[in-house]
Image (cartoon, rainbow, N blue to C red; front, top):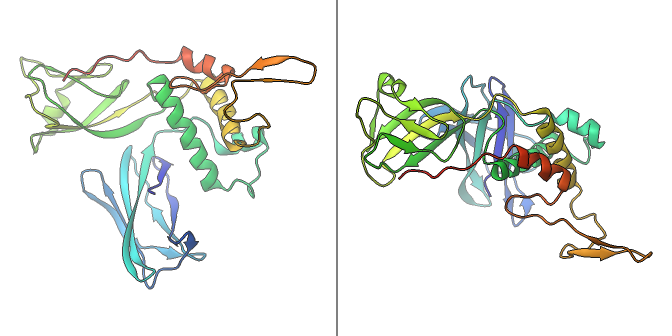
Length: 284
């Protein structure tokens, strides 16, 4: 299963991958190569991975001044078969909270929760928050295929547009001047002077940055609270399918349950609700 690794822009990070055969960590026979590319296929970095513990290989991702999303292909001969496994590296403009801060607040040890495992949980919390609120609280990058509609207006799946970086229409890349001439709405790419986005199915590929400059303090605080519930999942004595429970003195308590727009934790949901962005229809 591909992994998503989020790293901070301008930061050099060592990432790792573990090869497994029948759930057992297994060394490759010979060299493992690592190849990083942008989503448009442009080469970013490549080289031989460094072998560590059994089945574990690492590679240093060079720092990027730009927000980006990269594919990372690990290739080698494992278990007698030539394999290539793909991970994704997302270069972001920030995180919802710092791991060191979360460790202190939640008393999480490095032994029980190494950096990579805790970072994965943070990504899970961030993705859930984004899905519930329909927004990103830090700068991010995406590359999306959109369908033209013969109007000057082209809706995007993300709001809070910051910068349009590239546009390709029916396979033809636009010049920097043409890209710069496109106006940015809250969730809309707007052409002026009577120009339109030509009709087609996924005929327009746009690369853009979106999101807020930084998360509000209460979002960071509640995201750490949500982290606590994810790292302690499965430790409750209440059956996971229960909607209510009673205690020895006869009291009955209803359980707040999660849904498409709720985590099921009232303190978190109250804050997320305040920051939820109103979704707008995408013109297609």
